[in-house]
Structures are given as structure tokens and as C-alpha cells.
Length: 75
Image (cartoon, rainbow, N blue to C red; front, side, top):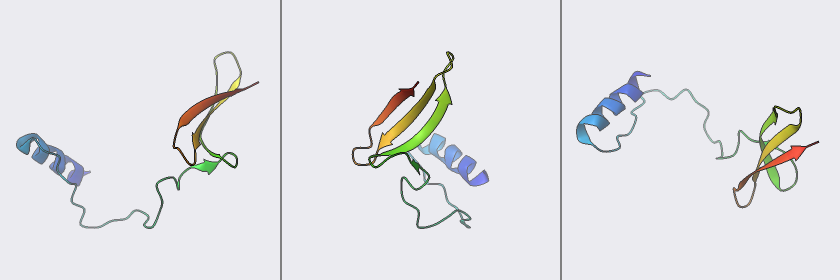
């Protein structure tokens, strides 16, 4: 958290984007851009499932090739 704040303060002073300097990285390495997404079907990833205010189930999906986000209401 301190590294992020340091970069933010430096950015405010320089008026430029400043990198966050991490001495130790504790995150995962070798992951892809969409590695956190779950497969929905052959062409799409599942981004989010939710229930609408009228009780229908809605899914938000991301096309694997184009990256386009779309919604689908399941009744």
C-alpha cells in the first residue's frame, strides 16, 4: 500500500504517470490477461452472474476472440 501511495504522491508532484516500485512481489507470475475468467461456453468467458430486480438471472460474458462484453438474460 505504501508503494502505491508513494507513486501517487510522486505523480502529483511531477504531473506524470509514475510506476509503483515493489521491492518484493508476492503475487502470481505467468498468468494471462483473462486467466481469472471462467469459461462460459466455447466462445465466451463468464464475467459475472447476477439476479435482476424482477427475479431473472443475468450473465455478463466476454467474447474470447474480440473481447466484447455483452449481457444475456436467462429466463
